[in-house]
Length: 263
Image 1: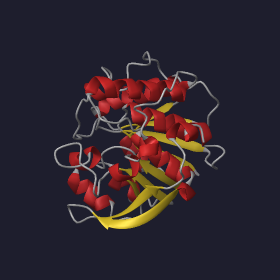
Image 2: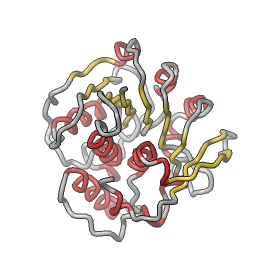
Image 3: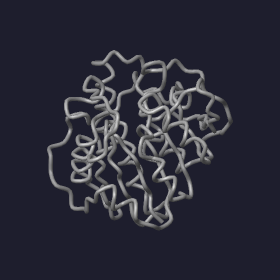
Image 4: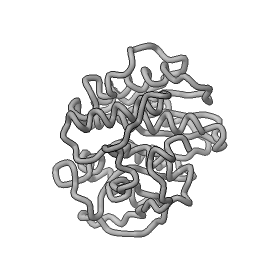
């Protein structure tokens, strides 16, 4: 069983990847595939960041494969004020990771059972959904919360057509409504740099003060938390402003993010 993550490698993608890989073997996976896509950064920068992250993993983890999508045109921003100069917090030096990197065209031909986490714009996600994942969880969209990019949640805004196509498949959506929960807001928390996960989360918090964000939420990691602990959430159906019917997760566990960061 494979775990496939589509990530536009900003800071919350990095935190989500570390969290997922830290627990992946325990969760029954035997391989992880990190598909680096455009979004928070262009796809070629996301690829560099994926490699840097894997090269700096300092804990035992299952085999990892990185998927290069940089040859495919994708909408992207370069949100340096939120994610730092390199798009991933400027935490890591560039190193080649001890893992295989394959082009997206080769990855599309692979088979096998997998669960899918989409943590960036949906531009290339339909190709993965065509391979029929066992589970499909994504971070994106909003129902009632104030949007953060051009009238929409960022991942939705960058490719509304792909988003609308993808949500026709069975899914659970970790929306802005899911993440903007008072217990998940880290802005007033003291985090520290005890391990890799805390280092990344701490940098994300630091960047919220520089960028003027009103709260600090590790958006993409909440999707990992849902995949690992669906009992921490209720799921309900609502339509968004484009008429997409979303199965939205609502956090009900009752613990602060720092209490669940390693769970």
